[in-house]
Image 1 (tube, rainbow, N blue to C red):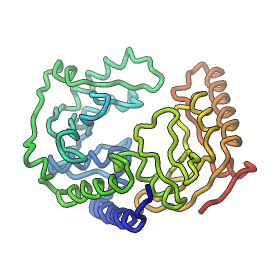
Image 2 (image 1 turned 60 degrees about the vertical axis):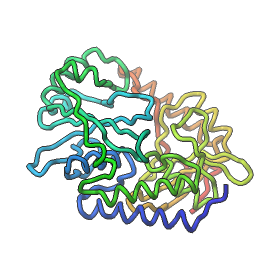
Image 3 (image 1 turned 90 degrees about the vertical axis):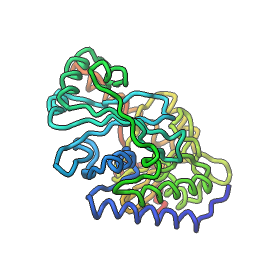
Length: 333
């Protein structure tokens, strides 16, 4: 597939106009990352005002100043529960200060990106009491717990349906923006073969691929062993695309590291996600990067063992200073 570069760049420019709207009016940046896009769909339905930031802050407030935390899952997701990641005692002890909206996004029977068709509205004090007990038995390293509709109903909560006719038309504060996002996503899918490109890192990978004359892998979901892009000769590439020059490698296993060794290069890009612009692109050979990643993971495990703790996630980073010392280091942009 040959990309229509002119059309794709025009669509990305249109996305930036929408991004600028939310940044200028609400201080909400980078709406196509970290689930912020779906939070806007929920805020639109409830006529809430989005709150700037991602983790560590609430998602929205109503006109009376009451704050809300949104949780959502999509109909097409494999996990039909709401997830609390990296919870802490301090986080749980402050839940009484706000209200939760646990929403279901129907992205199967409605045009992408879908609508919120039902939800539970749960006072934070109820979640605080529930999670303070339920998390006592959690032993997973990531401090993660899932909450199901059945569990919410056991707490006395009732499912509430939305007016799906109005919701499907995105009636609310952000109708025009959401309809345009839907149109752009549909066209980008046709042009690239990537489904749901705006709700994954694929959008930013596409920005990098356009600079390098690569084609992004249309597969979503991060299947172990899947590459991120390839060139005209069929050579594969691993992409790391971040907002700073410190690139994170998550859930590292021997299988993942061995997969990297099959790639032609590891591409490390710096992207302004608010401006939807690629700032810098570097690359290194996997043969240089993999031994460094292995060594850093082993050092992390050894430090944890000495301190009597466990490593919650097998992840580490490569900084610009580190990759500059590698003999294969290249500046591509």
